[in-house]
Length: 202
Image 1 (cartoon, one colour):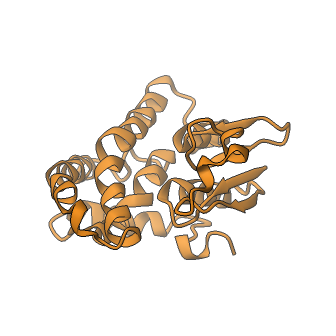
Image 2: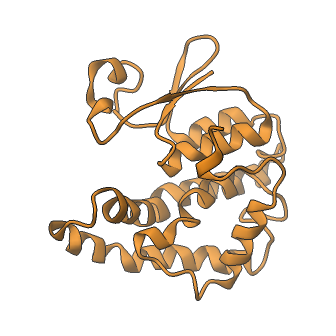
């Protein structure tokens, strides 16, 4: 299986971490988003939406959208429960990550770290603070009740939210007031076969 992506992207790191933890072999194919590589015809043939990550499965088919890919890869493992309600809880957090968390936390990281915090993006950055902190608050409340986001077991919901939450400070978000998130981040790092973003491809 090939993964086309940029390991600096949380959405791509999710897949590398999951593969390491499930012992799924993969070949990493670097894609430079900032140079416009995802808008070139060769990439658009893999994903017409022009976004990373994309995986090419062993049978040649392509699959995009990080959380959909995680569901595919985690099928049959403890990372994606068989129980109907437990699985729905995992999906609930995957949707939350993409709609209520990633647009604020991840985009803030992108503006500050990769675009070098340009003056013309400051109003946009400021507008992401309140909804970003609201998302962190929702997570912290849940983690006051359960060890992991979808319950008592570590799942792809935790990987999905960990990917950008552990880097929230890079986007200007303080985690000082979120003790449950801080505890959870450390618990994720203690999971078997965990690899950091810096070591995910080693």
